[in-house]
Length: 414
Image 1 (spheres, helix red, strand yellow):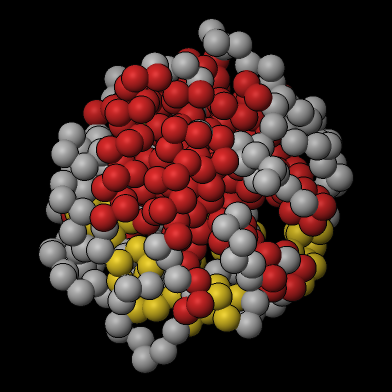
Image 2 (tube, rainbow, N blue to C red):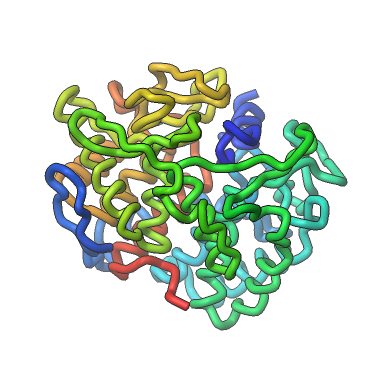
């Protein structure tokens, strides 16, 4: 359901939600870094309990015919980012022992077989959005689109990273995962060290990604040997900025969205390098600093939120020169509301950098738990749930629990 960075590519996630309503090592940051390292989660611990709840969403929203997972319960489609989350949730559930070998083998085999047959956009890459029921490409309105209209390099990055995790750690499905990944032609996506998207509404390919998302997506391509060197390096376009006494980075190209999610995902899946490790610690510190100043628990990230008219928002740690604002799909436009505590990123930060503050965040999002899985968060002031379940929330909670159990990133070296 992710947008793939909507300053360069229109958000399928937003359309999804409109349709629904009408969806590591010590960190050298500043301030108290809390504890680092694994939680040593047991099979009966609170992270495992959260993971079992998260699995309910994937279990109930998997199409029996294709094995693909819906972005939200009432939206019959999935972006390439969502398909990566579907793989992540299924793999993590099996590694945690939530599902047995037979069920995992059936589900994973079916999903990968479907992915191996999906039509590609312009013969180059997986399309931005597919119908879960039959694997057909669909347009922004959710209608069938035989030729397709776009790919998102950011979404492809998550998808490729999870195919790499499966290829390196699941011998039974490695060959099929490799076949799915190798269908992508990186020659039209990686240019001059950067990642490029394509969209039929634009006259030419366009640079995709900013600080955080750009590095995360590039790691997915790099896992298959397709290196976008400038995109991989956080410091390529990083300009230091002081926010409340903490040095973080804004993107020198502008239109940045510095949120928790890509840094959490890098920590869980690939591990941080020196620059992303330092920035990640400071970003968590800065969110805790806001709590100290305002009394509002703050875990700021992108999420599906049942609030008109956008239904998908970026609650930014830093966006467009401003700390702690809400960004939408109109470049450069920010809002003050809605503000919520992100469920998936509360669990993600707690797995990576556990401390009393992350424990408080996890406690704060407990009202988001339902019999159908976890909602995306709770509103900051009322602590009422956001009203939206989605595959990305489910997947990242399962990933966080697996990281907590292993105490190491999920992508094997290789």
